[in-house]
Image 1 (cartoon, chains in turn cyan, blue):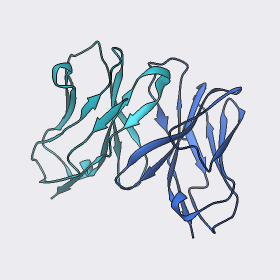
Image 2: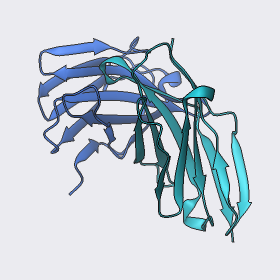
Image 3: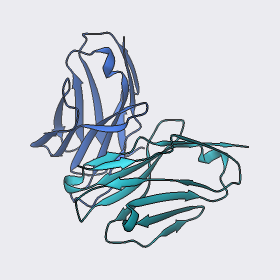
Length: 113
Length: 113
C-alpha cells in the first residue's frame, strides 16, 4: 500500500528563518512520483514540484529547495529566508500506477513578521 | 481565466438533499478526478475518470456518484447529502500519461446541515 507521512502538523517560524518540511513515503513500486502542493489561506491547491523516482537530483527554485533521498524514502522541502506569504498548508503526495495520488495530511506553516 | 473551474464555490444544504458539484477544464486533459479534503486527513480520492467512457471508484466513493459529460466536464453528485459529507471538494485534471502532474481547481466548500 502507498502511504505518505508528514509528521509535522504545524510549524511556526519568524520571517527570514529557514524551515524544512518533512515528507516520508512508502511504496513497493519501483517507479513512482513525488509532489509538493501549497494550499494558501485562500484554499486553492498550487502545484510546486514533481520528482520522478529515478531522478534523485535535488532541485532549487528561488528560495525553495527539495531534497529527495530514496535511501530514507524522504522528499523534504526547505524554504530559505521564509516570508509571510509562505504561510500555508503544504502537502506532499505520492503518485504510482494510473496516476492516483496519495496525499499526506499536510503541514501548516505559519510565518510571522 | 482559470484552467480548472468549479461551481459552486460554496454551498450550504440540508440533510437528504441532492446536490451536484461541477467541474470544467480548458486544459484539454483527458483525466479528471474528484477529491475531498477534511481537516487533518489530507485529500482523499472519490472518483476518477481517464476518458468519457472510463470512470472508476476511488478510496471513498460510497455516497457519491459522478458523470463525465464531455472531456472537459466532470460532475460529482451527492444523492442524499449527510452531515459527514461536509468538506472541501477539489476537482483535478491531468494529461493522458501516468507521469503527468495533476492540476487542481479552486475547490468547493460544502456544508451539510
